[in-house]
Image (cartoon, rainbow, N blue to C red; front, side):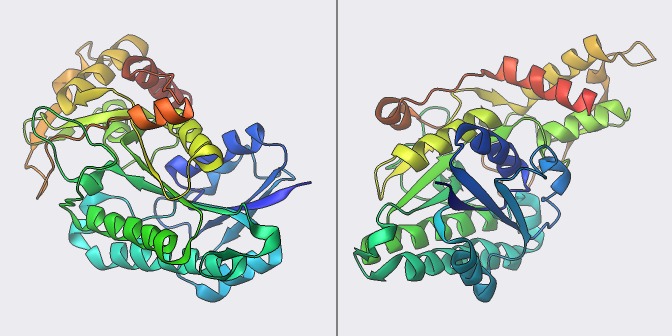
Length: 336
């Protein structure tokens, strides 16, 4: 028997990698994809499942209470995997309100609709909905920034530094509250920086590739020394799948690639791959296009995740290191 799962924001970068993987991995699951198709969402990202019998797309806003409730009723939703979020940090600096509305209020609307549909009252699930779960996909940015050493753990205190990360921290707390106050079966995953196919062109890695291929200067913030822990998007998808199906209710799992790299390393790696695969007509290296620009306000210096909990408790492991993943990523953009 097929059961319907609501995936929000499935036309975005991570969601559009997750959905085809998830449908393939679970022949008994029908995915209802709710996405507003803002700047980050693109149905082209999902063309491989567009006509799949176990896939349904709905255009709409997670803040729309009437729509969200109707989806639960119409499709008898048995689980939620919640990706939908405003996530571009630069945009959150110039327009913070939309981030708070979507990420905090939108998460509340979703989880409250799930509560009303699945449960009779706090700590009492309706008989046929005993195993229904709300999975919230979040970010390592809620933990703030790290010094030269140390890793973010699930018990690291929250210290968000941008309107984006503050709004994601708020949404994490909304989900936590529904577990502790209402007894909802929730799980939260906080991931490190994702990269891979289908990423929005404004993000760092697609920007570097796009600028190289257009022979334009490649903008790198500050001195290029900011460090991130990079996670290949399909590795993230497998971690979400595991946490959704096997994670312990009320728990948080950090998903990271154990691939700390600074921006200088990343831009140089991409330039070297493109020098070999798509050389410039001038014969010069793409590295000549690297340009350092004024740093982003409140730019966190270093993020890195300790993924020990999900590795040990659920048996998850990243298959790609940064070097194998970035090669696959560049090749996808070259073939696109």
